[in-house]
Image 1 (cartoon, helix red, strand yellow):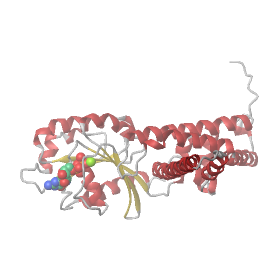
Image 2 (tube, rainbow over the protein chains, first blue to last red):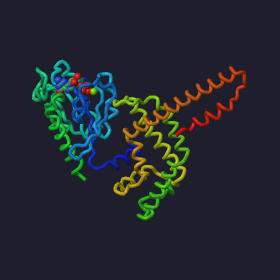
Image 3 (cartoon, helix red, strand yellow):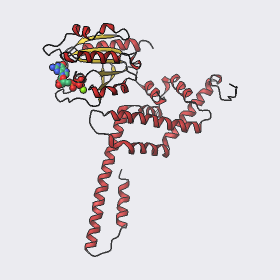
Length: 184
Length: 177
Ligand SMILES: Nc1nc2c(ncn2[C@@H]2O[C@H](COP(=O)(O)OP(=O)(O)O)[C@@H](O)[C@H]2O)c(=O)[nH]1
Ligand SMILES: [Mg+2]
């Protein structure tokens, strides 16, 4: 980090958080982001680059980064790790076929040094679809209990109906806030 | 290692001296950012990359590469200039001084420096630059067509061509804003 980044970090108003949204393609990352931002979710096309939204929530300024998840794009993820306070891992709970891939990518990510301090929220998305795995099932399949390096929580949700999105985000914000804002 | 350093040891300086040193560096940065040379360097960077940018919500990965290069370029430029202007300038030292002064970093200069590492501000700047560049190109094309038309008209009338018209018109176009 050069001196400009140092300066920028210091100039940030106290309650700013950087949140990185990752997961396999088609998991619902962009839909969650737009839904949370109160935007139309009917015209979302697959993400080939990345989206950024800055939104205010409970007096926090959330800088949310949503990066494309197709296999060929995953090598770009690492360019967005720096300074991440919270990681949201989004899962298409109805896509049972790709659960192993999903598990591997998640556990690989957690080895990243630059994400070491980040709180992890797993969204078990698409709960409105019939046949979707429950959060408890996903916890098993993704072997979440093996995670000892990060504060984590799994929350079921539906980006389409909006159910439980706030619950997940609020847990994430609380965990980050306790960690970084009450210390100083 | 032989003790051959005659460098100022900052820990030996009084608070007052450190203050002076810090403000002198900030003053130099202010100067550097106002000089034509910096503006020219900045413009050259914009000119090199603006065609990559598009006014869409989604960002391309290449923006991130350009953004990093931007930060590096500006940092390197400022650092080199400071090295020339401030005796014994030490960037790490300056960074530490910045951190100590977290709470009194007010003023335009710090706002400006902070935006150099703000991705959204960076993207906006490129989109603005692109708009201006496209408009300039458009004007240039219109003027060029107009000039060709005038030349054609005059040749048709069997008159000699006065190229000074072309020149005076282009002069107008170069700086429309
Ligand atoms: N039924 C249902 N579909 C969803 C949900 N979330 C996203 N989708 C759909 O899944 C597809 C992929 O969503 P998108 O946000 O582009 O996924 P991304 O690749 O992770 O950004 C889109 O067709 C969305 O409408 C959800 O909660 N329920
Ligand atoms: Mg997407």
